[in-house]
Image 1: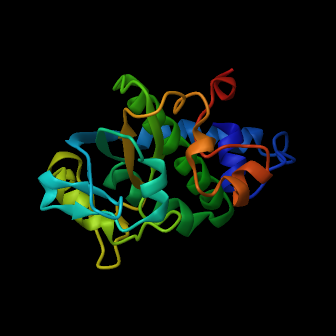
Image 2: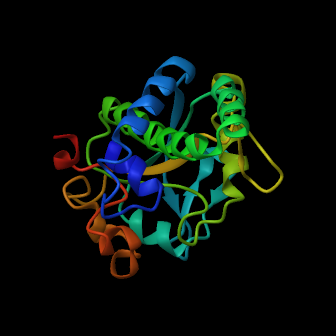
Length: 220
């Protein structure tokens, strides 16, 4: 969590680990007190159109016009649509903190992103999906942000965990995320997810010696 927080602050070399350690610990104490992690998901059979783009027939033949997903989901049999959030009460709390102490608010915002990502990773792991791809989110790569709206409606995330969206596809509360996970297909998805990603050769995470997903060594 500390490494992820520093990464969200732009400190990829972890140079501020010692200076900010107490500040980050304070943020995680606030998160445990104020945040309410919630998540939900649905699984759908995955099909492909004539051009090889992934399609969810159960969602009004929703087609993902994305070269990234066409590559990542190649051979997958189904897809898990997963949404998660820290809740509206934390949203209100973080805004109050930002208005009173901006420097602490900035660190808290980064810690909240790290906390949400870590909690979502743990939730995903508990689903025991078997061989699966990375969790790929609208707005990343060439997958348009507008897919957020239709996918949130498909899994009824508003009523289940309180996530809505703006006209531009952004989340309310802001500390929320949605991801698509391809299930089945080639062996090795969980062992080396980078090899299935079109951004492998031009990835900021890899250039910094990291990945966009949690590895076993990251938990040690």
